[in-house]
Each structure stands twice: as C-alpha cells, then as structure tokens.
Amino acid sequence: MLDAHIVEAGYEASAGTIRNITIQVQPGELVGLIGPNGAGKSTSIKTLLGQMQYANYHVHIGGNSRYAYIPEHPVHYDYLTLWEHLDLAAAVYELEYESFRQRAEALLRRFGMWDVRHDLPGSFSKGMRQKMMLLVGFIAEPDMYIVDEPFIGLDPRATKDFLILLEEERSRGAGVLMSTHVLDTAERICDRFILISGGAAVASGTLADIRQASGKPEAALFECFDILT
Ligand SMILES: Nc1ncnc2c1ncn2[C@@H]1O[C@H](COP(=O)(O)OP(=O)(O)OP(=O)(O)O)[C@@H](O)[C@H]1O
Image (tube, rainbow, N blue to C red; front, side):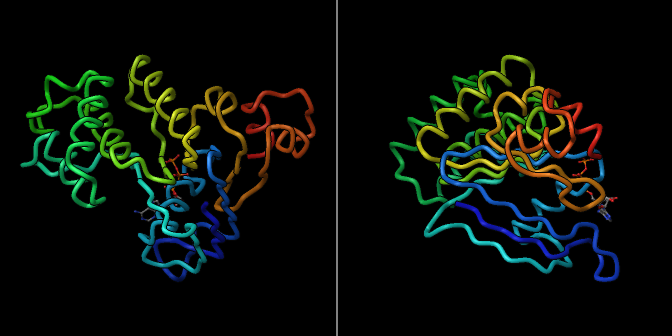
C-alpha cells in the first residue's frame, strides 16, 4: 500500500507548485490522479518517487513492496535493444531468469512487440516506445504501479491490452496510482479519484464523493472536473 502526504513540493524552494496532497492506494485498488494541464499531477508523482529538487513530504510504500513507475515520456537507453531493456529491469528486480524469459515473451507477444525485440528503441514509433515503458513496468509483477498518463500515444488495441493487463495485476493484489486526462476511461476503471487543481487537491474519493463535492449528483466525471477546476 502507498501512503503519502505532500506538504509542499516544486521546482524551487521559493515557489512550491503543489501543496497539501494526500495519496493513499490500497492493495488491488486503482486510484486516478486527475486535473488540468499544469495542475501538479506529474509533480506529485515525482515527489512520491523522490525526484523533486524541493519537497517536504512523507511517503510510505508498505513493507517490502516493490513498485514500478511508468513515466509519461518514454525514457530509454539508445544502445540497448528492447529485449535488453527488459533484461536490465529483470536484473534490477532480481527476477529468476526462466520465469523472466517466459513472462517477457508473453508480454512482448501480447503487445505485438515480439518481432522487434532485438531492435533499438531509436527505430520505434512514439507509441512503440510507450509500449516499451509499459513492458518494462509490467515485467517485475510489482506490488504497486505508479503510472503517469499512459493513454497518450497508445492505439486502441494497445489501450485495451494495457487495461486488461492492469485488471489482471489488480486481481493479483497490485495497487495502481494513475494520472490521466482521459476522464471517460478513468470514470470506468478507477475506484477512487484525487482531483488536483492549481497545485492542491480540490476533491477526492469515489465518483459519488466527487459528484457530491461538485453539487451534481448525476454528473459524469468530466462535468465534475469542469465544475471543480
Ligand atoms: N521543469 C519545470 N520547471 C519549472 N516548473 C515546472 C517544470 N515542470 C512543470 N513545472 C510547473 O509545475 C506546475 C505543475 O506541473 P506538472 O507537470 O506537475 O502538471 P501536470 O498536472 O502533470 O500537467 P500535464 O497534465 O500538463 O502533464 C506547473 O505550474 C508547471 O508550470
């Protein structure tokens, strides 16, 4: 489980860009971090990961939990092939080789990347690089996924495969924190939401809680989003 309270964080000590955000994710739960451009979603995620230059926060990732971070913008090593990226992740997570190999093959085939496993990411399209990030994240079967805007760049088939895989991982007990702008999908798949606007949490809870905060008991998530941000 993930339990975090961010008092304040930002790019400079003099100007905190986010403040007072509490993020909790239980095993098997999918929590959506939503908010307009520049609201502070990525900053919140980078704070959890200890990547912000200036941050005053408390974060606890339960027990010996392993987590995977799937970044919004793909990051890769130019001279490692797709397979070598997976192999590197397997080494970092200390996976047993044979089970790693089987899982890697299954994931690569599932996402249509088996035939390009020995290619360098420089030859991949944007969406293929994004898929590579998903595969690197999924390879270790971690206890917690922290995913920053996964949908931009994925085609409908990859989006569907990603959502099915996420569901499987959740039923195994993995928790997920996911930032996204794709509100109709978020409404369908998230258990709870944290709505961030202007660097602070303006509402959080289930869809019913968010509706209540927006004063519209029947509204879709995007209508609540419009009212609250
Ligand atoms: N590298 C940076 N240097 C300085 N300020 C930054 C930097 N990146 C983001 N910011 C500022 O931090 C604030 C929060 O940005 P953040 O990237 O967390 O927003 P976001 O909610 O993830 O937005 P988006 O939906 O556009 O990805 C914004 O005001 C932004 O201008």
